[in-house]
Image (cartoon, rainbow, N blue to C red):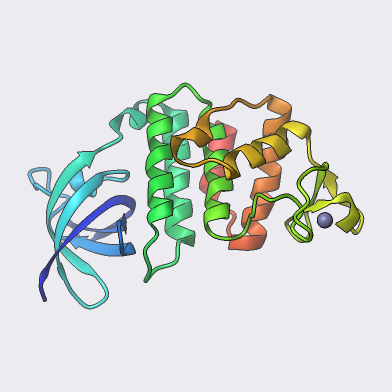
Length: 242
Ligand SMILES: [Zn+2]
């Protein structure tokens, strides 16, 4: 049992007895791991701020069987500004839950970690609609996870022509590969998906979307996540109702 250093962000938290917490952390180089923090709920605990949702920290921990026991947490970024706005907070909670529920364990997830950090920074520091930030996150996350290529039709890769969405299969298709019943993508939605998949870092947040396009993007991505990742999270619907 040696001491390990982990740099990562808190994506989930739960109580562990009266005064302790268990947190899920997406850590650089190692992916999603569980850390237990004894006494972290005590208001005087030096672990308190480092175990809050969205805290990005350098952790020191002992490695146990299947989990880590935290001894120190040095806060790098708290994303505190997100907590001052209900819409932003709702989307950030949703993004953390989505990653916590769908991100595989046992391997590094550095692309997802970077995407989450950029998305939380965009929520905190930009005027972009919080819902749009979540949709952008979803497109990039699906691409990182290998479920969305960004090269147009899923069968032939044709991205020049208008695309259609198959609700049944959760696929983007060109006209030639449609079976019937597919929804034609709005030009703005097709452009948005291509914009996001062709860029990286915080460049993906540099566009706006009409309400009409936003509604279609929302529906398509909800279905996409359901088909390919098997999730339909309440926190996503909750943020939509606000
Ligand atoms: Zn095709």
